[in-house]
Image (cartoon, rainbow over the protein chains, first blue to last red):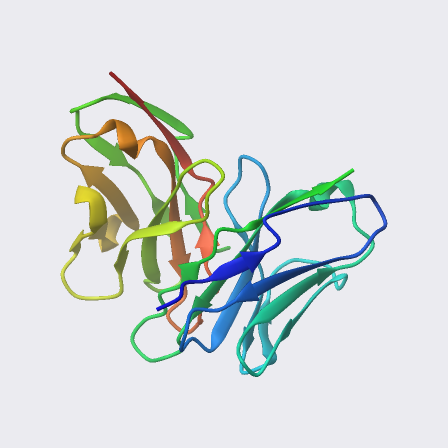
Length: 114
Length: 114
């Protein structure tokens, strides 16, 4: 069974640029959530996708957007990058079912905005 | 407002000593509860989870946690700490009607001394 994978591992961008981060869900999972973890803080929920539709969003501006593909892989896009977007971006996948919602996290993508 | 609080930002413990990490939450109803561990530069690894039932939960690496409804707490414990337990620990909660939309505490950094 393959776990959650993310690419790239590290990324350096400049202010105003756009970035795309990628996530491959664990086999059999149909839900993916994205989190932003700033240095020294806990992860913050960005949004979630279920069956290719956005299914909830945290307190993030519209320049944060995403996609989920039929194979349940996902992308996080951030436009007009700001310095405060520098963070570890975590992807988590889960299988939506009754009785609980355990998530499995990927290793993250470290984004640095200069 | 819903919140998750980890009162201790930093804990230093001697190898072989016991460890307890505190987590308090404020939610309308009892949420799903989780503890994750994060080593430097790594993603999140699930230690244990509480969905319902027995309030004492056993996890991996010798960790356990106790859910106390009256105190809205879910504290993590380990009887004897190993040097490899040095890491950051996050408590997370998710509403039972929500799929994977976790709210994390700010984390507790654990340092293990010889």
